Length: 225
Ligand code: IPE
Ligand code: IPE
Ligand code: MG
Image (cartoon, rainbow, N blue to C red; front, top):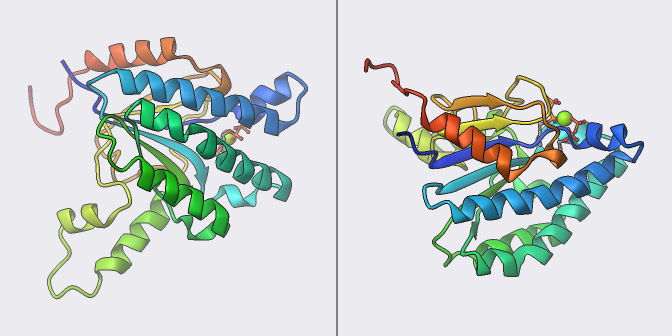
């Protein structure tokens, strides 16, 4: 039976969820943040799951209206501050990925603080992908190692990435069937699941069903069974 050791989720559909309720898009992001908490706690209770990597803000999301971007930054700050005790109580280690140098100094400080204060936790690792894009991640990795004397190997590049762990199960909510620049290297052999559910409506029950279906898949990694 397969184990979903590393689950990655493209949390899409917040804006549409709000629009369907005639609310402002940002209300969808607020509702989405609650689901992040529920899904993270659920994964922290499943001993087979080691990592949960969540796409929260892409390198392309800066193109959105200034007010929406500002709201997302404030929401992230608030979420991390209120979540710190919860991370520690549930033994969850927080490890952001993406180029956080683009964020305000105070948000960077909060991110580093939560990372440091949870560094001793040895349960689930929750990675929020923030100002993350796979192209940007790969380029930064190549630039880190380009001056080495020998040819770059797969292991060298893999270890220079923000996320050094291959993905077993990749889920996208919100009905679209694309990767939107998420974990392109790490998802090389991930099993892909697409759900029409908008992220604020996504439940631990649906995640449980997806994981159950995942466990039955025969993964061959290019070999034969
Ligand atoms: C995903 O929801 C959250 C972020 C990208 C921050 P969207 O905001 O993309 O929601 P839709 O896709 O417009 O419904
Ligand atoms: C992907 O969603 C990014 C996040 C969930 C953070 P988008 O809504 O930005 O992706 P596209 O634009 O539909 O591809
Ligand atoms: Mg979207």
